Length: 124
Image (tube, rainbow, N blue to C red; front, side, top):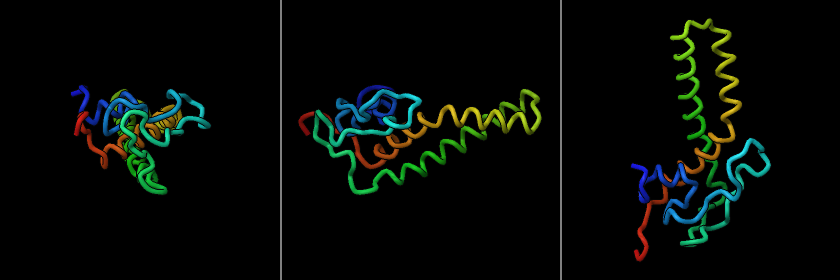
């Protein structure tokens, strides 16, 4: 499931969606917003242009929205099962979403580009 050639491999290892060898983001994941979303212009291994068209990654906002809604619902269910009231549950949701926001933004970009670019073995 996490072997080279799967979409999850590309997303979780910050790799090019076509060759799974080149690095996608220039900087490791961090909590700073300045360098968090800087991507290379193209893959160093296969030459894939990451910005397929101008404003390509605007679509990643929809992926990010889906991920944050799913996380918020999961946190709410966990808080409900733990017996927390409504206000503490919403505070927990806000804290978790603020902390995970930089990672969700990166994951959503990788998921989005993996929807359109498929893995190709070397020699194809």
